[in-house]
Length: 219
Image 1 (cartoon, one colour):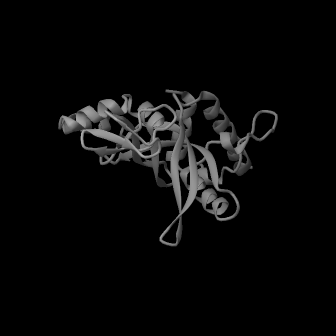
Image 2 (cartoon, one colour):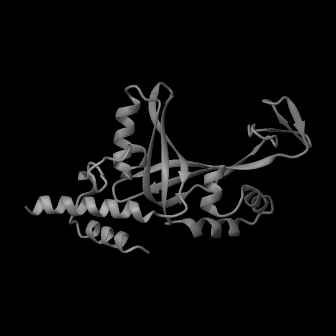
Image 3 (cartoon, helix red, strand yellow):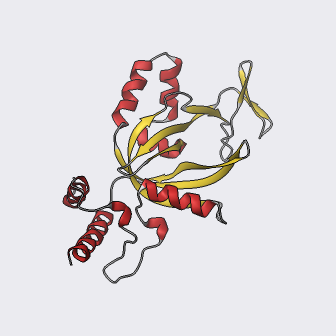
């Protein structure tokens, strides 16, 4: 779509530049952008998360341009409390739904996405969770639609819906946290933000940085 993006892809595919060696992106005045807005590779994000989370930080945020490699079709939504600002999981109690957080029963519940997806770029792959708002943007339809398809046994339509976004390229903001499972630390990734589209300014900044890198290498 953008000439800058195509040029970056050609350079990467031809092996002209190693994306892991790009350390910093700066503007035309030499001012570094805050790390939260920098586009990083998944390998960089994994390494940064491992080092930062094992020290003092409890969460870190990074932007990345990734491909949706796969989406798990199982357990893509949960039934939540219909009250605003709750959204906790409810439990079926006969013909009603019980919210233990609100201590109330309801006639129905709101489905909310919790989508597990394998993200990929040229450097690595990670599993990440898209929650309701971001998953709705990704899939293009609300969780209620998915619930209806599932309850009506329309698995073929669900498969087609997931195929539409497979290998889609998106820019996301990834939130990385550290949790402990059976005494072992592990990194958990979730999607904090999904962008409407790739931003030309980011591609141009990457391109300028790569051009400077190549000039230094050639000299």
